[in-house]
Length: 498
Image 1: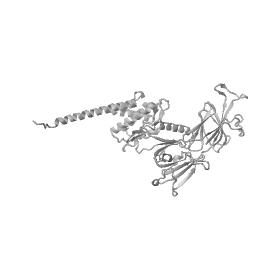
Image 2: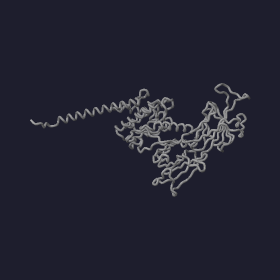
Image 3: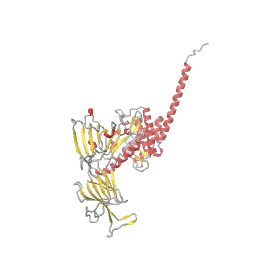
């Protein structure tokens, strides 16, 4: 919980640095982190303000100057991690971690929208606010649960089940996301304090980790989870993390998380995308529907080649083109089309997953993805467009048509930050594979892999060409059936009487 006494008059003297806690507070404001908050803002005026990001791995916050002028943070009474009487000057765009405690925030008003502003002493007039940053009060309990007798979230574990309790306090653990420390066959119980005699908080919840779906990376972890507020619905629990020693990553991580939540919610009702079930900003967690089917990157033989048929590849192309057409109609870009982010569902067809790199079209943000799939213009620094997603799908189709093994498995060269010559060699290989494509599908994929974005086929044009090809096939099958019937009638013996 954060208590913000804003515009605190003369309690903090901006010129002398003295602090008078006998002066009355003005405009008391209280902010509490919820499952929807990654940060809060405190503005002194339209040009001077600070954004405070919550650190999921500790009780610290990251202060980021979001304004256009410098601000000062004065540690009036804080923990040992920061030290008393420390003053931090943050220029626009600068950030710094701060500990729980009592802080003063100030800026010197040299001019406002109407022109220069000075005090009677002909010195800049200070703007001030005070912040009481309190450590989190919830508790984090872990219970080991045998999967054979799995405890339903919300129920109390039996007495013979081993359990441990960890109270989340300032700078607990190693700074990593605590949800990534939940081992398989473990239930965690999150409890928020209430006053004596009051009912339990409605924000209390339990989570059981059934199994790890994917090995945690430096950026994410994915668990097969049961959440007490979701009943018996199993979810894929995606957890974002930062490096424990790099608190300066928190603002960008929080912004990435918030962006993924926005796109996940926007697409959750479309059958061509994995469904978002919920999220919790306190732990950088997104709950997605859990699918039994494997991603297309796992549909391969021992040589890494796709094991599906040509008709299966065509179905995937049709489904994904329909999904990309929907993204384009909404003004969205996926930016990470690849087999690993595609799952074939027996009833819903091909689904796109992982919206962590989604952006709005034409907003100028740089493209994402991994190098085998990114379009040439992205590699050259041009902002992505719907045509960039089409190119990525084209490379995916080379894998689905058996022209290449799974591209990212072809060598370690893709793991470096800038593969340079490796990318140009790969692009040459793509051109060679492109020239070898034949048939209706081959003609479509050729148009998807055009060197320049403006020459590529669109998602709707893909659907139209597939529709025409399907009608031609059906017409050809009907003609063959008629011809076969005529031929059969010719061979039938004449049994008429004479």
